[in-house]
Amino acid sequence: MKYKIRILLDTIFKDIFKATGLLVLFLLGGILALLIYNSISFFMDVKPLEFITGMEWNPTGKSPKYGMLPLILSTTLVTFGAMIIAIPLGVGTAAFISEYAGSRLKNILKPAIEMLAAVPSVVIGFLGIVVVSPGLANLADLPNGLNALNGAILLAVMALPTIITISEDAIHAVPKTYKEASYGVGATKWQTLRKVIIPAAGPGIISAIMLGVGRAIGETMTVLMATGNAALIPKGFFDSVKTMTATIAIEMGEVPYQTTHYYGLYALATMLFFMTLIANLVGEYFINRFRKYHAT
Amino acid sequence: MQHKRFKLSSIIEWGSLTGTTLIVCFFLVVIILEIVFKGIGSMSWEFISSIPKEGMTKGGILTPIIGTVLITLITAAFAIPFGICCAIYLNEYAENNKLTRIIRAAIRNLSGVPSIIYGLFGLALFVQTLQLGTSLLAAGLTLGLLSLPYIITTTEEALMQIPNSTREAALAVGATKFETIKDIVIPSAVPGILTGVVLTLSRAAGETAPILFTGAAFYISDTNGYINQEFMALPYHLYMLSTQHQSIEEVRPIAYGTALVLILVVFLLNLSAFYIRYKFRKNEN
Image (cartoon, rainbow over all chains, first blue to last red; front, top):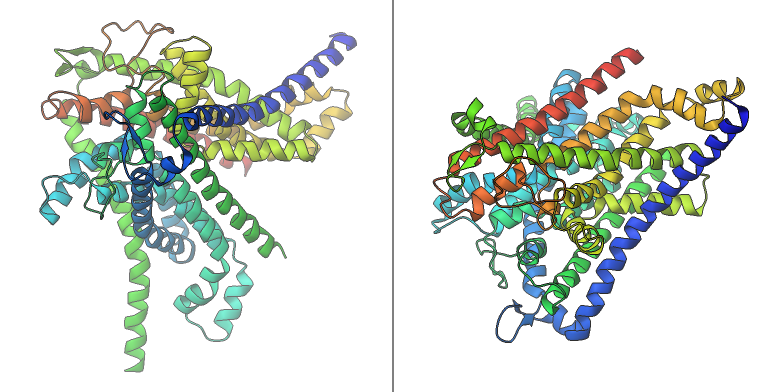
């Protein structure tokens, strides 16, 4: 090929590659602009204070109510429940894989965790309906088991792979010298794990938990299918709840274009976006701290 | 006595960690067994090769299978070239400056954005602004956007594995930078890129939330799969059969069958990704 053409191709492709990099920025910018633009349209009709502190979400009633408190409390309750289940299970499993399992067992467990991560959320939601719900109804003597606890169990299953993988990395990255020093002064394996390894891996584990939280807050299909979707302030884990994601999923399909209700769903999405963003940023902060800490 | 107590406590300690691991494995086993045992009854060649009949209470799931295959192809056609180009830019061209750091932060944030928000964005951008309507194309592009950050991240990791000496050798014999990337770097990174792409597509094929408003349909009668029309997809079909259908109990076997097919598709894609990675590592040694 002629030299000039080769140089020309070189510059053209350099620009194409750079353009794709910039387009990613436009994608995030576009998502943000869309959310904020529509939220502003919403706040022209509804006062922000009413949105944030309102106790009732009923956009289709005679006098529409746009209080997002029940939705945000539902999301919080389900996520909190999921973490109560997933944190001990996830960190315990990570410690087992990293410290106790032999290399053969590791080679089975790690792909198994990846398989769990690969199960589509709609399948987990389906199992919430056909397995967890009847089980809970039997145990607690309820008419049905579509409630916050069901959602929490399913979200725990969905957050577990994230928590296990990142915690395992963190525990694995603790320098060997720490362990040896601990054994050297006569500590048992368990004492070393609890008093030395877990604290040293602490920031990494916190980041694993925060990324798990981010995943749980943003998860849509499982909670949509398994929590019953009653938009009331939840009183406990046996109440039916309607999370922010489920509200968007249910109502977006039915709402007329460019109405207050339509904009209201975007305002909810904006809230959701920033909640997951904060969870992820905190997670990222701790990952970086963890890396710095062990780099020295 | 002292010795015995030591033993007992260490058994409890070891047992608690083994216990948590067993519970996690138990979740996976329950998911697989429940779907496989209850889904296998509906499985037959006819189930896979015939369209839904009589209000979806009979017949098979051919239409959603076709829809899922087509939408995954659109996702791939959009996200793979775009994602690979962006990864090439970040790993081969970008200097370590503010712009690059902002792009990287944007990619990390995008991978944390909930899938339902991608659905809203797809609705606003593709369905409404670009006038594609609720269609296979709009939904495929939405899933493409969702897949983008994962493809970029995994591709960049694959590119990072290629030693710099390889690039320098190509540049030294007179290749331009683009030729080096096209003929040397990319071919050696193919296994790593492929693993990431397959894993990402398996994830996209199972997504439901982003296609809810961008084109997934309750029921369509023909199997032609026009790009500008609504479509049926396996995950949406499962959602619909288990929560929206008028006679939920009657269609339960079909729902189990759909779940089994969906999980098989996803697991097969995952296994092929594991296989590529395994073979690649073996060749390295």
